[in-house]
Image 1 (cartoon, rainbow, N blue to C red):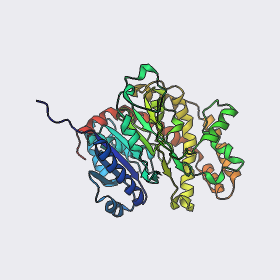
Image 2 (cartoon, rainbow, N blue to C red):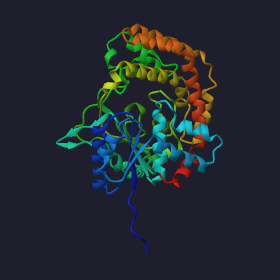
Image 3 (tube, one colour):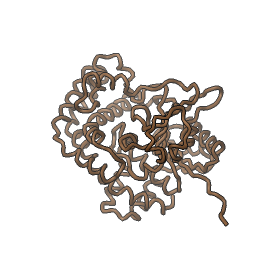
Image 4 (cartoon, one colour):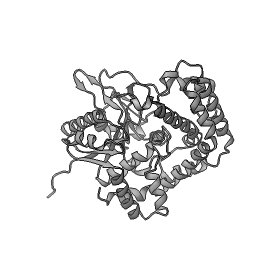
Length: 413
């Protein structure tokens, strides 16, 4: 006789390196909503690299199924996973998975491995600088839309609009996501009216883009969406420009391909969104957008400079990422790793020109941006070398990812 059907288990994750008690309260409420609304087993994972562990622990104390891990516990888990995986370069892999610098991709990769260890079918990521919209007196939780679709055959998913080729309807929905309302996702609102804004932001356009395409990209970049006014969801292969990594969920895809672990580089965690697009995987684009805000630390002198240098590194990384995006046609890890390696064989001169144009744009902005221009000039060669080396490291991580996921599944958190 068959036993009782096991409840679906999901991982709702918040990586943080800052104080975020208010955000954690919001996400705890989302976890409770998901459990009550969908009957799922929610494992709430907080990867805490901040100096506010005790305050966060207090905020999480009443929640069920919480995994609140500081850096030391995360590293100990990684050591055991890597040892079990028996990879060729364990020390390098450990440093890639938990580098010293800020890495948006690495923290999310750790969440992917821990979710596998916890037996979770899907991963739902939120960030520490958000809260949820309220509509008709109720919180607008993204997980409502995510769980309505994620992992189900696309043809069985109810959506407001269907824009999916019939040949994809038997495939599971691999990604569900939305965007944000509120402040820009990249903190450059203060310079949007400056003449040099276009010069700076257009630098992340794909090589060969026309002036018209660059202008459209600049107008569309890092801006939010309309406030929630009722559910609207599109079943399609999702345009990467329409979703953000602080409001995203994955099924299956995150266990096949990891994220780049580039340090001090904003946008390094968006790669899987492009894999879902170029690989033609079914996705759900919904409108349960989170509310984005910028912390006070971001506006401080030190916070401002650090963030702008992460933006600078993002621009330089796009030289290699665009090479991959323009050629990627599958979600096959081996094919993707080959493209990532091939991207590093490009001549460096075009990216050197980008670095020079970026310095000039920052200098034109003036004021506190002058110090950013000075840093770009002083660290020019280092930034260029790091942008290329990050791709070499990423290819290695893709090669080892299947072994790491398999090892995580038999490793206790």
